[in-house]
Image (cartoon, rainbow, N blue to C red):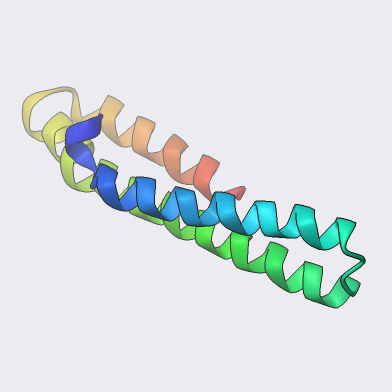
Length: 90
């Protein structure tokens, strides 16, 4: 799976998200206004969604393409449809 995505980009983004979540945790202890906490949660949620998009795009360009060209196209498409369904639940 590593060959189908830019792992350095994913790791960098995930570290940023972890930092955002740690900031939310600190904000709760520091009695920061709820609106500010909600904005930070939304920023982390958006960043995580973007990571999902990047992973899904890498999957499409590598795994799905390879599966269609060298494997069972129907199964590959079915698996990709499941991946999209999981992603859309985020």
